[in-house]
Length: 406
Ligand SMILES: Cc1ncc(COP(=O)(O)O)c(C=O)c1O
Image 1 (cartoon, rainbow, N blue to C red):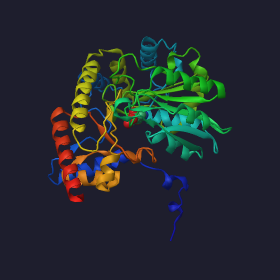
Image 2: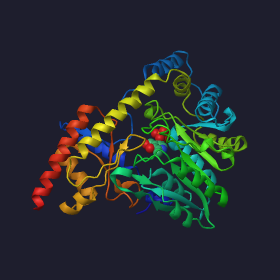
Image 3: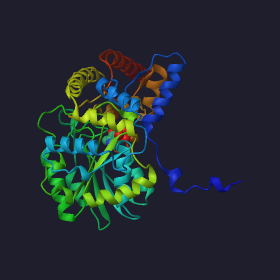
Image 4: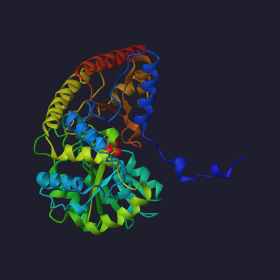
């Protein structure tokens, strides 16, 4: 019999989780059983948080910096973030226009739930990071998915600007742009970003710009932040964070940048949810963003080498089309030819790789609907040895499956 505590808001059981976390749990279970699992599953740098950042957190703890802080973040962190954005993008951000949040996901939640009302539409180019559509669903808004265009392994992915344009209705309020993109690694060229910005202005829409991978760029000069547009504050809300750039996923620190008076209103909402981001983690983040960036630069150089190695290895596998991503740390190969020949779905292939060869990759179909169903997501935030060995195992699996079929 149903009890009162069973009666959830009906939207809650319908929300999707994040499949990467499910696969992490499965991989941990297999490792516990003694299997040598190689994971290309989860979206986090494999390097530990840089030592000078850890030292700053230790110092903050030693000084008992453990109480509540300002809801929007400590002043020196908001200032550090504003300086970073102004230095990098000449963005004209004031510290009072920054809200520090528990992870970039916290920023996505605040940003989407503070603007969208039941029945509003939010355009989400997909495949996409699942949080945008799930938060929209939670508040009763409607995600309108527009597939990215796959232009083959030489060109990769591009935004379907015409389709985005034709998907705008009277209910559209927001367009999500995640650049560089998770899961595809796409780095959209400046002219596509400019065109989207024009469209947003023409229809008076908000661009929710998730630029959390803005330092993971493998094509120099190609990344264009929306913050370089002169009047961006009227149309853009920016999401960014510390998780990826400084390898701080577990510290839970992100941020949202928007107009000062909106920051004040959103802070009133935020204080009712989480009071403030973690105090000593914020002190560490000040060190991250104002201290040396050398370890970040070294990480990006390392990741580019790993990307090249993974592309080379995966391109040897029959039926895989692999585009060398322009940003983030993912490859998103099209495996439709292999799936057709082996008569498998992406999910079946992923399960086979996991349970027979102990390699974790993500099915493209979980981001979050259907545009990615012929693709796999690989994170190349793994050692070169793991990339080499993991790709060999996948190659073996593919050959086994093709032989079985013939
Ligand atoms: C595009 C994108 N946005 C936001 C996030 C969330 O970051 P955080 O761990 O800081 O919440 C991720 C994490 O994978 C991401 O890929």
